[in-house]
Length: 544
Image (cartoon, rainbow, N blue to C red; front, side, top):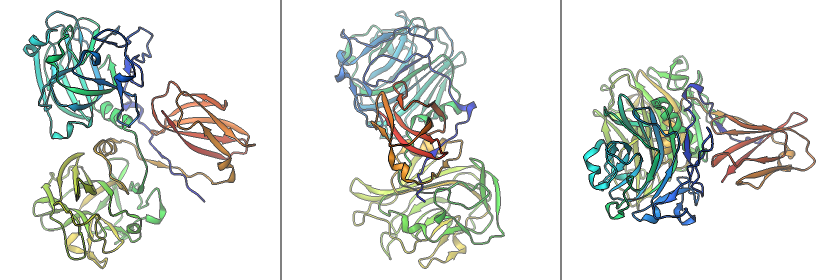
């Protein structure tokens, strides 16, 4: 039986953010989506005239013509008038994806009136390390008088990388979130008045020499409410395209040791009597009192030149008595463990050589921590890179002599470690700790993917469909599709067609084989085709 892997998430209804009052998708045009009515709002160039194809670049998924290009030129700075924008001190949230191409000094967006203190927006100075809530006057020269610096970047990788920002404001003050993380707050009082909005220049400022920042902007959304942190994290999950490609194994520890997507990689307990499950990050987690769990075959499926391992872990006691308290170990080589009052990662490059470890401090006891290790050739050197709670903290020593992790044996161990012969070692056991949501990929996940996985609040579901010859007799044309597609069948009677997103939400249901998807956001979807005989065929659809 052939299994078709579908990785679907069932979204928690109470976490779903409210509908924005305005949403610029920038998918090749400058007209916003407004679910609450048609009030206009098309973008125009500050220099005059309408936007054209040259004003749009690639988005965070690599799609051409799907983000707004903003430069230090009037032909690439824009304005619009948007009805119903939050006024005065009323609640508001702005969500957008930002990619700084060249560092500089520029307003990202601002809206309101043309008098002092009637404006609200966000700006980034030339260092790219500080973001500002702006509430000041409209001319750039006076702009600094009302700047409120409220965020310091944690690393220099922000340049030329897609970053998700959310700015909120209400009577109690403002907040700035970066990639789902609250960075800072400020108790300022807002007196916003006006509905003109500008991208790339402060309101009423036409002097582009004041602005030296080049950036791309995508999925700019405006809400007339303050989004909660739970909603913001769920939004981040929703807006980072999930890619299940090369997922080798997933362990959810829902009262079992099963590998949900491949039973060949089910885990074995060293001590079957030690079988305790407790509340985890999602559902249940496995409590490890003293003995680890393992699989002897999974190492055969690993691409040792490029892979990712991630897991949630909570230690409930001080592990200082164990010098090698291991969260997971692969092939008696790659490890993530506590050692000498530090958390360390490392790997063997050959049968006799272990690379210099990457290390960082240990988190407090009884606190859930998300560990991710990725390995690949980074800029000519092979490294194991460690992320804690989604933040890159350390890497192993540069290695220019190898392109992969050395494997002594095929065994993978959770909450313990082994020697080169596969023997479980007492010295490497993780005692009285919980582990949950373990993923192993044969590819390197980027930081947005790591964060999106970490933020998830529901467990993945893997569905298997029955393989029949009929599966090859049904196709989606065209695929990828832009506005419409058709379900083409060869003598197969179809009773129902439904479209589901990767969060498990049903988007559309119809009996019509010709389906319009022009209003759907770009991304990947699942098309479920039910035949009259009760069989179900599942196809993947890409919306461009």
